[in-house]
Image (cartoon, rainbow, N blue to C red; front, top):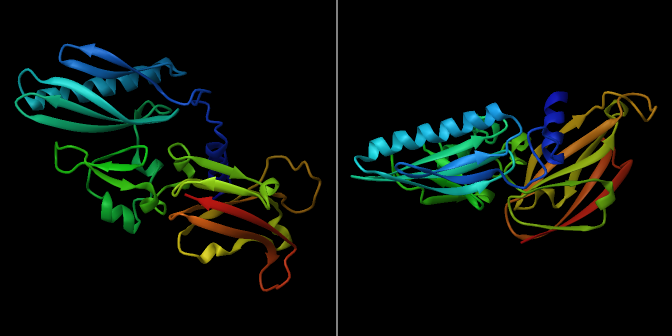
Length: 281
């Protein structure tokens, strides 16, 4: 990742997006329409974004009702709700029953671009999601069984951890930020939840952070790393002092011990090391 991607990732983990309010969900109320009810979004920071989102939902609902036939009744199910995105399944019952899934990016005021949350070139994406319609839910991605059909297949998030775009995944999944202050302590979490470990570093010294011990164990998933260089060097240290960010998660339940090692390549003795403990259940 480059400097700007690192900043975007750090912003996502810190929850500093200008579009995200202190509330834990997008406000979605029930709007009565001639053909039933549709979701209506309120409380977005920018009125034009709110207008765009509600126009999108109305257009989707009306189109689905038209396809379902005369006298179609509209309803919906919210499958996941976050401050900057939500997924909803629209349902129209008329001559036939049809379903349409929509994931809305409230920060953009439009339908979510899947590449903002997912890597589309992974084996898991190609196996479970490629060419299919889906929505996000609390426990996994719900996939539509057939065109117009129900979203009745669930792919659990732990099965997709290497498909989650870590830069945007914190908008959807529970995410944790750890620092050196958590060393020798234990974090309890669930499979598929994201972790970002922030550690002070200075790559111009030749020293690099890496994970050892159980980092090769089944169930551990390395999601890459990045380096964040502050605009202003407040440490007065030479070189390029900043923070290395190690991203990872766990695909399976279990107890894991990870050692973060700060060392030069080919040197056996590290400059520094920190131990972290995880209980995944």
